[in-house]
Length: 425
Image (tube, rainbow, N blue to C red; front, top):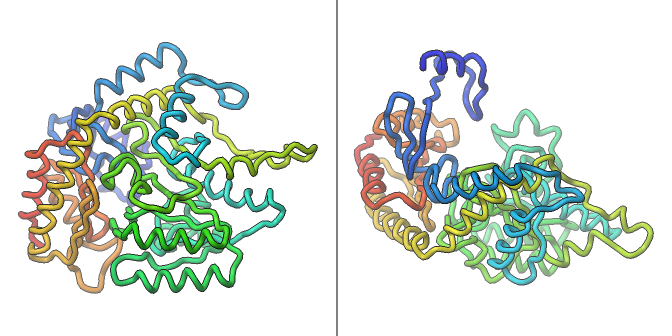
């Protein structure tokens, strides 16, 4: 055990972790349901689904069985010139849950690449028309991933600062949260009137890393409608919001206006294996070919070594099986109701500045004066407080959020609420 921890410190570079001598990473050896078990036997309630990926609980036996069966048949095959049943099944079933204009699924390997694919498709769509457009509209404080295209359309700040000179120009508009709807719509109107815009990208209804900022389907419908009148390609980044997180299978299900491209990842495999998916409409897909001799030049020349990995596809199909069960939706509705009830109480907790709730997502923002943001000094106090009590929360600065796996029990979720009550600013 001591060698393991020491070798971790010596050999492994962990994400989003300051490089310092006293960093300690908790060794985890097993997972079951909503719990992770440390090497010392201590149990940790995973209240954030391990970065929002785990839908049904750790080491879910049904998903594990499907993956194990697939391991015995086919672990991987390149996806250019070849295909396999799990990829076809998953694509077919995803499309069955979407409006009929969505007809094609493009596989990649994580959320950032799903977004990169969507951006490249939008840019090449215009290129293939012989009328290239280069401008993208995004929301302030957005987060779409850490590859260069995804960074470019994310809010500029400490995450992107070393790379700002290399990122393409983006027009940012205010996130249309309550009180900023008119400002956002006015700014959007100004941009689309004077610029030839290639695409609009957004996290539908909830901006995750921005602190779980929530906005309404009605204002999003208005934004999409305005862009649609100008022929602008609409990209929904549902990497975090899909698969029940906002109370419906996809966040777009709560909107009248639909996107042209959808990026999916995180919960798609139930937290078992990496996978990214970009779903597009028939019109978008058809723009990448023609009958003439130059048609091949319109090909979407993008791919990944592990595109449509059969093991990941099998896990995603198994996760989708579970998503289609009534029991899962009963749990989602229970979590949503519990969050809603506690949200009312949380507004009265001393030191709480704001409470935000959407579906299975609950965020609590603490008052810290002028100092806000990811590196808020309160972050470490919050993290350590909950970890000592066996609860995994990963604060976004002075904001904590709960996005639990759907198997979490009423009692387990109440224990998280109780710890929040006990924290003193």
